[in-house]
Length: 414
Image 1 (cartoon, helix red, strand yellow):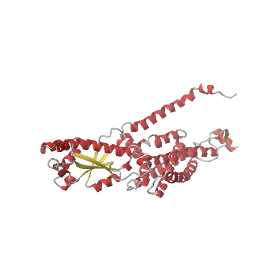
Image 2: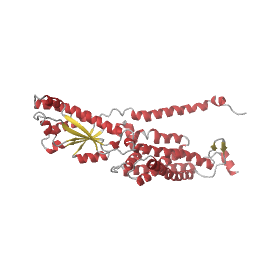
Image 3: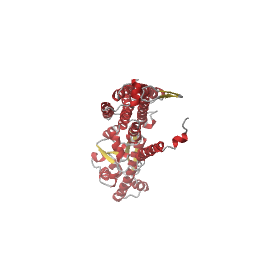
Image 4: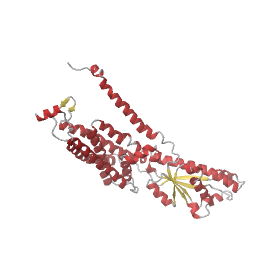
């Protein structure tokens, strides 16, 4: 007589899976909500480059006043202010991702302000705000908003000082002196079409991570089915056979080699679809292909190692490492400076951030300042994870912790 579902559901043991639901809900909430709910309070965390060419040129009293305000005055805590000696240096820092915006005080800033009260046709003094759209819309938008707010407050404060120093009867001059600084926003580069407004690197990295992760799940169940450790099911068919005489180490090595082969094919398909099918521009196609193979292999070998060491719970651990905490801490959707402290630390440890940074350097025509670090970090995760897996599964094999039961060993011997 076949068991009915009601009989199965009456067993208290079956309801232990509700605990897994609670754990997943907790982990996903902490990972995704905890990583982004505080990103709208950027005070003191967003890096902005500051160039005071007015003071450098001499007689730059106004530039000196503004610079003092962002160093030790009320505006000092509004951002991470990074001093640069020239506009060229500021542009380089933006292209390297050191800052997300740059304030350029021009050399004639004080002279223009002084002429407001004397000129028959006064015009506001201009400050240039450089942005780098490739850093992503959130990073650029946040830095731009902070810089404009700070400059607006500094402009009104500077205007009050000018009125006290240079009284004027001109109505136009009085209006300009109340808010004498005009901010002109200029991007240092344009975002190429078909790059999701600069977010293409993040989504490309996410595709690589998910591809490797899902291939690993298929390889784990598929190879174990071929070896006889798990049944093979397709539609209504179910097949089993006695386990083959192979240890955990050799099984993990075989799965890892298969994972590397699958990574070559998957990385090729992903790049072809992105470039030929979707029109995504890539600055270094060959480099992106090689790095993508490394990323997919790493994202697949890590779950295989965790599954080999921990069994079925290894799939949950792999999900937590690569997806739940890896994606929010990667700095791809939100810049790392806006993330909570714990997620900034996780971003420095987990591989997702390094994959995202490496993809950004290869997709966009930017100085590859983080590419070497990204390659090394991802390779360390791959080699370190595989070595740790071989060591632990080797310990299982040597200590007699076989994957098969005594009953299955008897069937295999027969």
